[in-house]
Amino acid sequence: MKCRKCGKITAIVILMSFLTRFPVYGEPPTMPPKNSTGNETRLYSEFEVDTLIEDLTAAAEEAIEKAAAEAAKAAALASIDAQAKAWAEAQHWQGEYTETKRRGVKNAVITGVICFFSGLVIGAGGTLLLQGGR
Image (cartoon, rainbow, N blue to C red; front, side, top):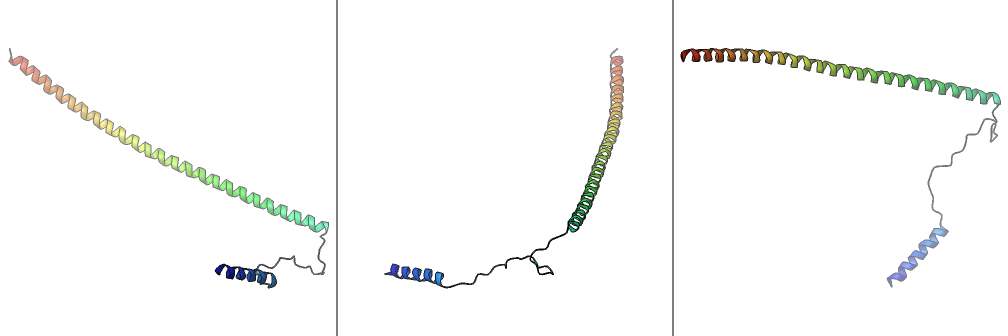
């Protein structure tokens, strides 16, 4: 029973879709603007075409020159940045070297003083022991 109603409804919807026009909304087709003479097509003179080509060529060359200048500027800034980083790293390592050298000299002096006093104590103690045993 239910299937008969579904079939009838489906048949009615299909028939309505063929018989009834439903509005469809979309963008209107684009048309080229009409020229002032009213003709559909406009013919350009050879002079106008040549002038347009020259203008486009000049604009393209100017854009290429600007792009090249910007690229050169970016490359120069990148080079300067790299040099600044290298200089900062060199300064860091120079400071590390100076600090290490200063600590090394300090440690050498301390070691020398300790060795001198140790040798003096051992030498004097040994001399006193050897003389005391006679």
